[in-house]
Image (cartoon, rainbow, N blue to C red; front, side, top):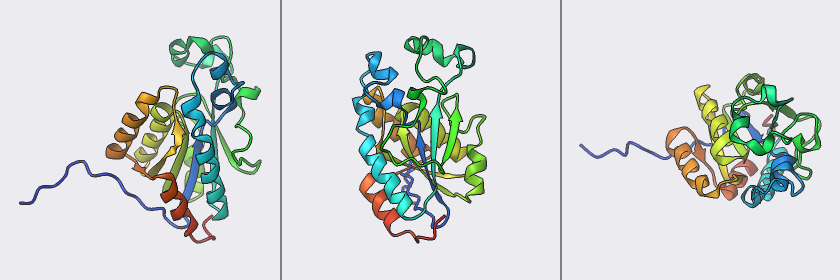
Length: 215
């Protein structure tokens, strides 16, 4: 009997007409030098490295009419932030607050008013949000993921996507984290556990040949 690798790397292809792009939490507070994270002394350089790849991915998706969905993470106050706020004491005085500049999507990524926007209060963008309904309405089967943080909201949301029988595809260059040493381990967990990893150049090339009628 030939040996079988029990941990095959996942390699899903984009399904024409049934693909969507979800960009996780590309907000000013995470990515902008004047955002709450940077102003609080958090090194955001690894997250900022995902900005240009994300911009290119969004542009390529639009060229083939692939729907783009943006998520935003935040709270109304400490009362609805949950235990997470105890793990991030620098957020107790502000940051990631709904209806603030820091909560908004970073300018220049290609977000448009008619895109879908999902407001979330926990790591997974599926938890108590309409994200699943949106993806079902778009007939999505394969879902591209970009955004921050690799080891937290990207990992949680892509895993939850697999629980709902979507096929998540994470673009590593378009993701980033505040703890760079956890970036590669998080991607490794995704690769053998629930998601396909697609290098940026491959993702762009695959998008470029999708039928333009993909909506």
